[in-house]
Length: 453
Image (cartoon, rainbow, N blue to C red; front, side, top):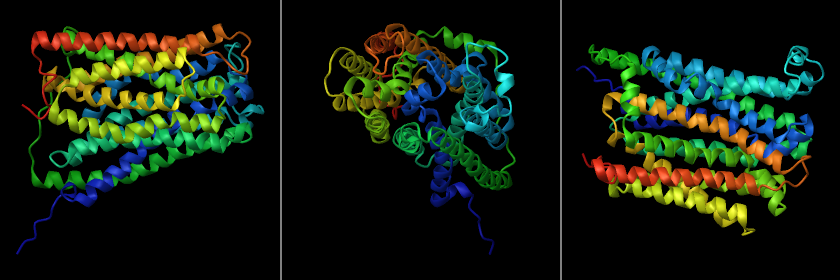
């Protein structure tokens, strides 16, 4: 009797093993991105970075995704070349960028190492260390955003019809775990500047480990493809990209409102997160380790709340209302931080709730707004718009901080900077209200439970 051999993705153990592998890749991605937020003062002391320099460093991650539209192009490349080649290429760019960033901060490079003279030969207003680190941040951003799209497609491939929603919820949790780890481990390793380069190299080594882990995944992916090809010879027709796909999206007001909510919401959270440890240290007198631990409450909370809110919205609906509530909470928290000395522990928890609620409602609501044939383009365009804010607002925040604190005092006044984040949050709230109005007028069904067809 012939034995029917099941495909790898039919095995629960293999599926969850794959989730652990790609979840690790996602975690080290977020670890490296957030590892520097607790090192801001140390970078300023070691390399004479201004607040604007630090903001430029943070924002350079988004340059390839904003101006080169890699979030859109990466998705097209993924569909054309497949998971293995696309994933390896972009995770490799992540690792390359991480190593170049760590090299730019290393003692060897600072002592006239390879490339130091070249970097000092142009743009004299910026240090050679900063320029090398900017190049590293560019390549890291080039690979990181598309690697997130690759992970999403991997989960669809392995979990479609088999706990896919739970897998995506855990995907978010893995990302937040990386942020939580970075905010706690990075300042501890840096030891108040005594081991700054060690903390940065640790982050880079983790990303390189992520590349090795992804290579392990490609072996499983190749075996799964061979099994699936043996079962069927049918191919799924693909629709080529057309400019009209973008123009149709931009003509949809509800899509524009949700995209603008996306960019304003994330611009009021991620750039704030990059400055938060220093803000807490300066305003509330916390140590760098304690301020990092306090900031880490935000990603820690989202690890649990995002899957929970997704589960509720899937069954109860009210996505637009959830986005309004989340945007309102974000605005309130920033106003409390800017205008009061209220202990920050409770507000940061509410910020974590807002940071869970809006993404849990926003991303799945896209299925109500666009045709299935445009889902990929819609998400890619949203990522590009989002990265425009992630590029610009760290620079704006650093510029405001420098302008309101001339001479870079040891304890900076963040009031004007946090009020800027509050203003961005207010814009997000307005877009959420407009989205609900447009949904009520056009009947998209955003408020309906997502499991209702």
